[in-house]
Length: 172
Image 1 (cartoon, rainbow, N blue to C red):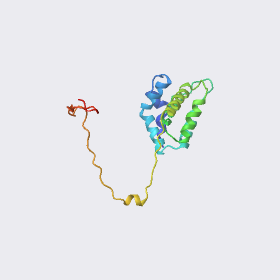
Image 2 (cartoon, helix red, strand yellow):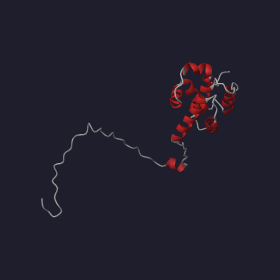
Image 3 (cartoon, rainbow, N blue to C red):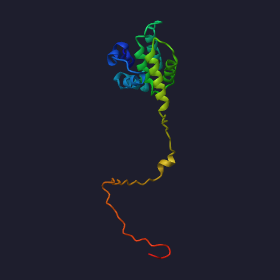
Image 4 (cartoon, one colour):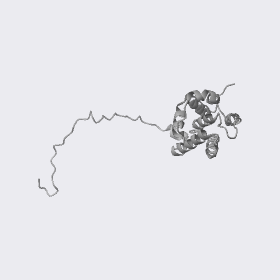
């Protein structure tokens, strides 16, 4: 069974990102990839669970060898980019844990995670609030609101007032 996370595998992702730009630019480039957006929405909708993300990261980290570049380095960075705007606790945990690492074997994913955290904390959080109104409020009669368009400044007529002002003392 394939999951949206399979779109981030190194074999597939290396075709989309042939050269490695600096981390800030790489983060923006990763956000534009359809595979990263697909994973992002799958996590937000719940079709990709926390356990699936943990298993995916564990499978990517199984290739880790001390002193060698991790082949899944960009994949882990792409996962960080896809989890950047997700407000689940495991997304925050993944980004913070990856950003705290100090390993020469995976420099890009660590720096992309740092960029993602920085962007995440700069972005305002809008809470969605739901209100339930009592039945009394629903039974009150309401009247329709009439909304009239305001003409744009280019359409408004030029009004020049010819009104003469008088001083309070009566002199003109």
